[in-house]
Image (cartoon, rainbow over all chains, first blue to last red):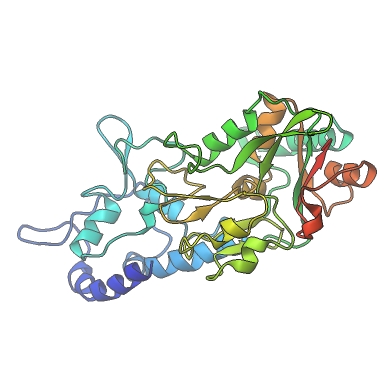
Length: 132
Length: 242
């Protein structure tokens, strides 16, 4: 996690420079192609999420695990549920697979994601299309 | 079934769906679930009462249910594969009397695993559930050495296919969470449910601090024991028949 935060800080400048503009990537644009989420509105503004999602997640994980507070909005489970894509075989594709929501941006920013060494990459009881 | 449980089931059934208008219903949260946004309370002390006279040596319903619920796949290495609950068979050497009982994290009030943890990863929640914060566990395994109940496991391998309510990965210690995710939602641990459904109904879950709960009433009325009570760790898991 420490590694993630450190690399996130280093990568944030590059992210901010390129990811500010919304909308699809134009020809010659090197920004990552980010799959569309299921919902219409994220729990925070897109720009706020891009810069601060790691802090939201880190704050809430401590509240949930150590204090037992459930149901708050910055939930990794909810991120996965909303942002997971379904493969051609009908099974959800892990969010950390190549080209998927988490991985596309993180590989662009050269930031490793440690979350999914432990956390589920597909929602609920769903079986992942392939191994992690 | 006890009077208390019957009443709870009835209330759950009655309160679960409230019809506001034709075609419009409000589905209430399960009875006993803690409201979203509220923290675990020291007013609760979750515990188990296990009647070993009902527990059958050949039955592994609780162990199987735990593995399925928590996503514990093994590598066919019984000495190191993760186990949150295990069946132990004890024999009185004098009489030869043998019986079987499940042993899991005893969710001690004074947990030795928390005392020895160098990072604060091993922790006790306000409602008495002892957990490992795997975000800060460094995998030193002091807690495994300290635990008198051999309740903790270490993940030696990269993991995949984890359950979303039980994140687990290589290099961290893990143990029974008393199914905190189910308890917070007003449910019961998976082992208790399985024991009632396909086992011998030897396990009872409840709030030891609530005098009206069945577990508290039985503990107050009947003789119960705790494994290695002499250690003074005050476990929340009590046994009958050993």
